[in-house]
Image (cartoon, rainbow, N blue to C red; front, top):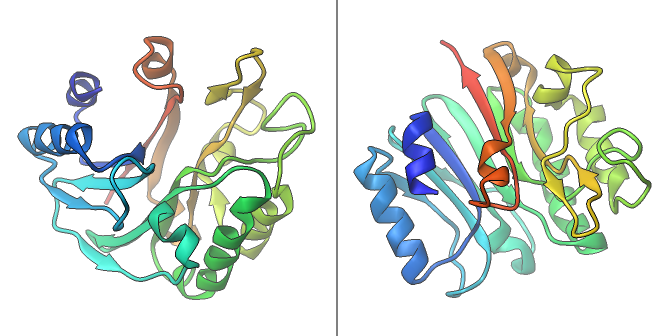
Length: 213
């Protein structure tokens, strides 16, 4: 994974399913060696899936109120004038409290240049999956109704791509980047790098955004 990240020369990375411990320490050292030495991650027990933001630029951590059970699933920072929230949602209806926390924070976040990015574990039925199995679809749609922009979908309105596949081979687009309108104006491209999944480095495809000044 570190070799792949080095190849695409990111300025900022949002890594989900990050775990504190030996592997997390190795990942942090490897990212630092690539220049991504500014790190932010929520407090979480060793071995518990969480979120890591790694950046070439200084990070200032921000607070988005969540329930105690979701505190390890979100980390929020300000970086280069952008409010960036990295997320890793729970399964089924257990993801709803985190959606509600983001819903509450949206009024303020949408006023500026903000981005929510990571594994949402849901999408829109019949659009981001082949079936009708998503839980909390209405929570995802509520964020869009508030004014968040699905940056990949805006740029690929009629394209079908999936970022994760079940063991039975069913495809789902569950990794998203939701941008405030003023930030989305600065996004010049958004695409999935499926090679990271196809090579077995992750079970998810990577979502890559290019943001211009």
